[in-house]
Structures are given as structure tokens and as C-alpha cells.
Image 1: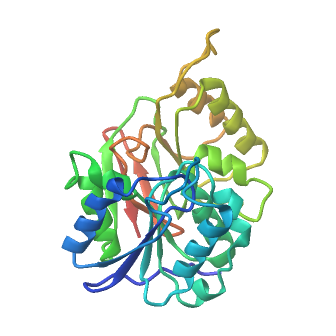
Image 2 (image 1 turned 90 degrees about the vertical axis):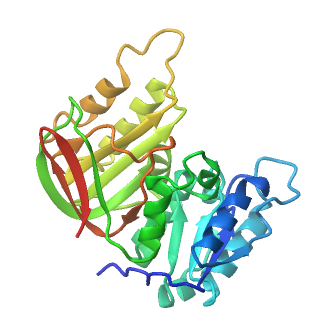
Length: 304
């Protein structure tokens, strides 16, 4: 089925902010709210942002699901920005009904644990989403950075073109296909569920944070065994920030682990692309056709 691309936003449109997974203090959303308002958007703040939760989650499973459901259904909310990720989306994903969302699609924005919403919506709704910095990213010193401004351009309907330096491990070539992916842990977590994605002929991007080297290897082996790496058009490895080794060394560097996982395939591969849990985190439209071009000097990912 063709992918539906949600309409771009215009001044006066409303962006809902919700936390469908982990807890986030209200203070971490304040700069985001101000910036969105400066861009000309209205903001509808969910009760899960800065809630009175006393545990890891922003609210109970029921309350988180109900709030996200209300934003998915409300025709007066034109985009949904997740406050943060963490963990918890998989606890509510099967409670959600996307019937109204499919009739009135809107941009769903976030990354990390929100990867599960991206893959679920792609597979079940055939609607494009935005893998992007979330509310907390607006608090960084580079609030007016390339990455936040790129999100603004995406919301306004501009096509993406991201260029970065080449990496010694890169495999040159050009690929075209729908762009899918996100956080490695969540991509592995989705396998065998209704949120799983078909990666055949796609450009897949992967990033992660805080994982032990052996666990990164294990999750890549899971993707490989499930056939997720076999028939790609191209592959983008983003940042794998805060990777850690065990007391007894795993024996391979992070780059070696990534390279080994795809050594048997011949499609273009980019390493160190600026999609990550670090400051360098470009927004990208998942489910949308892109071209990936890898040459000796640079890598370019262009929305078609």
C-alpha cells in the first residue's frame, strides 16, 4: 500500500506534547513549549508531562494510553511530540486504536522508545512519522541548532537532505527505498509482534545508547537471524553512544561488531551517521522514499 504523508503544519496549528513512556519533569518541556510557540504553533500539554508519578513511568499504563489515544483521535491536534522515551511504549501499544488516526493522519514525533510507534504505524497504518529530537532536546545549549531547526523545516513540509563526512568502514554505493528504522533495542523488541517491520528493499537506519558491546552484537544477530539485514537497499548506522565493555573484554570494537554483522551483504552501508542519542540527531521521515549516496568523501541522505 502507498505510504500516507501527513500534512505539513501552518501557523496556528496545535502540537500536543505527551509522555507515553518514561517520566519527564515539566521544567524540561518549558523551553520546548516556548520555542514551538515562537514558531507560531499552539501547544496542548498532556497531563503525563510533569505528572505526579512516583515511579519510572509518566503515569499508569491506562492513563498514558488514554492520553495518547485522545491526541491521536483529536482532529484539532495536528502533530504529536513525545516528551521523552525511556521505556513503556510496548506496555500500551496494543491498547491503542488507530482508526481515527488513519482517517486524519498527523505527524508523530520522537525517537528511542518511540521507535515502536514508528514501526507499528508504518506496518499497520502505512503513515509516515518523524524520527526526531523530542522535547528535552530543546534545552540543549544548541537549542537553535541545525537539528532543532531541521525539525521545524520538516513540520513545514520541507524535504530533507542530510550530508555528513565519510567513515573508513563505509561501503560505497547508491540506494533508493523507503526509510525505516530507529533504536536497535526496540527494533529487536518488535520482532515477532504486530509492530514488526518488513525491511526488504528498504533503507534501514539503526542507533542505540548505553548498551554493552556484547548486547549490541546479540541484538544485531537477532536482526540478522530474523532476516532484517538480508535484503536491504542500504543501511545507515547512526550513533551508538555511551557503549560499554564488560570486565572481561568482548574482543571487538563497536565498529567491528557493526561491520561484521553486515559483512556478508553487498548493499551500501554508512557508519557514524548523525542520528543518535547525542546532540547530533537529525530528524528523518520514516516510511518516506529516500536516496542514500555514499562516496569517498561524504554521505548524503536525500528525501525523494
